[in-house]
Image 1 (tube, rainbow, N blue to C red):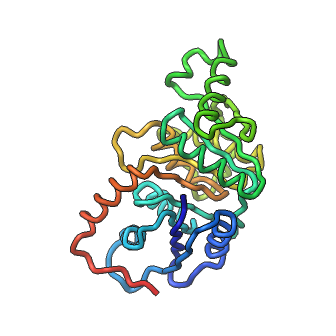
Image 2: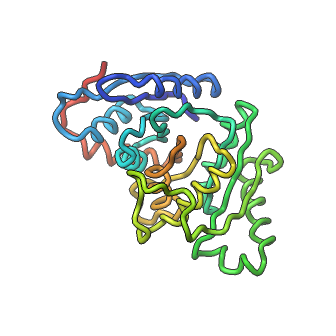
Image 3: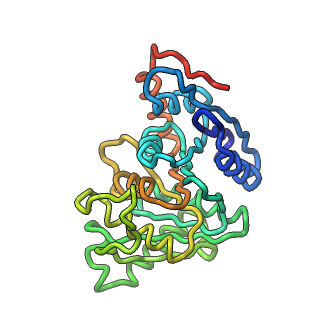
Length: 270
């Protein structure tokens, strides 16, 4: 899926990001890695610079650091390609992959990508469905095996097999187990926060090294896990997060981005 990888950095290129790109290139054959940095003297929004360059290079994957998790969240939602967020001082490893799903077509794409990444290094892939106030969760406490069966069928349909992927149905965590009152703490009343915290709690329990999630970017009708929850996970996660976009969504975002940036000066690339 990733044939052109763009590595984004600030005034100096982060060695951790280039190492992450090399990890992907070695694991996923055929990837071509490019690097660039945003010119600090360029007027305007750095976010626009990142998005403009990703579009100009027709990138399949944009890798960026998380010195600012808020910027990483915005890029993940608006980029015309998939985005990998690698927190500062964290080494990217692909051996334990966690894929949260909401039974949508876009999360099925994330399952396929997560399973492929884990398989490339002989690692483990776990797919988790987190409780929410939506179908098919309405009767799951009375019939837990029914939902487990649906999740296994969903995964088998997505990847053509289920023996290589672990399926996990997880009740939501109403009280936090992962927040440390750090800079990325979010108020409890923000939509999707409980589910995002549950995802990160599961990730910590499984010693996950990479979270893979689907996203519909700016689409108004985003499903729960493909909108607010993905944003919160990117914003709070202490481990790398890969947000995956489908081809149709990428094309729509690319068209909108080019219209938005039309007439702006090009990004300076070194």
